Length: 333
Image (cartoon, rainbow, N blue to C red; front, top):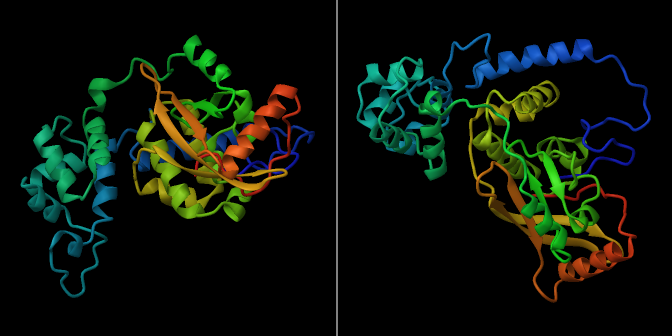
């Protein structure tokens, strides 16, 4: 993710400036909460005050609108005005009755069989991860909620990160809030790879939009990962979605697609003096028994990234590993 500009408050919303007088945000919070409730109701996440639309139904509608007749071997008749597929076309492709599919979209049937869900996934051209997500939505009432507060980090994870003197690593939760990082990660990504930072908010900051390479596909992946792991009733998730919906039309458009995806591995860019721009490979590892993810960075021997790790590790050991972030750096790209 791109970093906050100099002077920005770590972990605050993009644009917050250190030392500025604190305004009264009560009206803003009220507006944001109103938008959150309305937006979640329209996006498949029913608010407590308005559960008119089911998550499953909204997901089916959103995905149906993205599949074109030609994608599934159907002929587009002249003058067709429907965005995507019609309900009866999805039903026919899935081998179910139009009436039953209509009940699913309207939230009137909450117990579809796995056979039906797989058939719907095939009709809507969903990948394996999206079909699993469809199962989660269909079985939401059975799994929810014993609460949305995830378990805390095991001390062994903290010890592991502390002992990795040549491996930058941090832990994030399902909302992509960074909750733990080791010294080398803090040196590699000051401010944006440290506790208090949020990768989604970072992605939609102005600095990231202007300088990050391949911003649009990266933003889509970040939002898809947020939705995949989201718990709709989590106040922190509602805060992130509500804030970005108010501030960023691109986020609202991407979120409304209902894409889901697992981020497993990739490449991120960092500016390291005196080496210059360096690309690191990263890997996400699920922490068993929790919703937390361990993100590790590594470099192949003999590469500029390996030289950067050695340089930063020496600075960490000497206690001099603080540097200013540079626009265009990314945490997970």
